[in-house]
Length: 248
Image: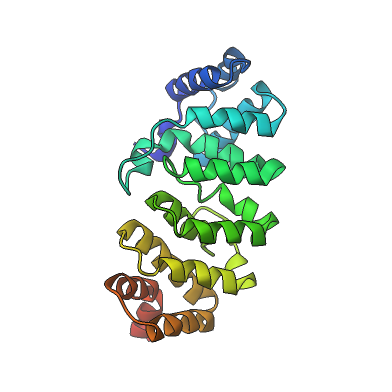
C-alpha cells in the first residue's frame, strides 16, 4: 500500500470520531461530508491539505484552543525507537495542521510537537517555527538533545536538516552555525542508531551545502576523542563526499 492510500474514506471516518471525542464542538458530520469520496484522485500531501482545510473549517477558529485539545488525541507513546511510520502514520494530518498554522502560537506548538514526536515525527511541522523563530527554537532543540526520549532527541536533529526529503531547504544550520554545531555535537555519541542516522544525514547535507563547515565540525569532533557512534556518524555523513571522490 502506498502512503497516500492510508488516507481514504475509512480514515476520514475514524479521524472524524477521534476529533469529535477530543473536541466536542467539532462538526464531524460536516467534516466527513467534505472529504468522503474526494481524496482518491489526490497525491499524498494534497490529501493532507484537504483534510487540514476541512479540520480548520469545522473546528474553533482559535488555534491555541484547538492545539490544547489535540494533546488528547495523541494516544500512547511509542515503546521503541523505530515504528513511527508503522503506528503513528494516522497523525500526519495533525502534524500538517501544526506545520501550516503553528506560528499562531509557536510556544504552544513546540510543546505539542515534543509530545507528537513520541508517536509520530514532527520534523516537517517544526520547520516553519524554525524559520520564524530560529534562535528561540534552536535553544530549545539544544535542550532536547539531552532528553531521555529517543524520539525527542531525534527530532532535535532531524528538524534542522538542510535538505530534509519532501521539504523545502532550510538554512538555519548555516545562518546559526554555532547553535547548529552545538546541537549536533551533543548528539554525536548518542547510542541510539535512530539518532545516529539523523546526525549523519545532517552532516551529509552540510557537506553538500557548505563542505568547509562540515570539515571544521568533523575536525572538532575528532580532536576531542572518538566513540563508535561518532565514527559511524562521520562515515555516514561523508558518504556523498566519498562517492564523488571515487567517481573522480
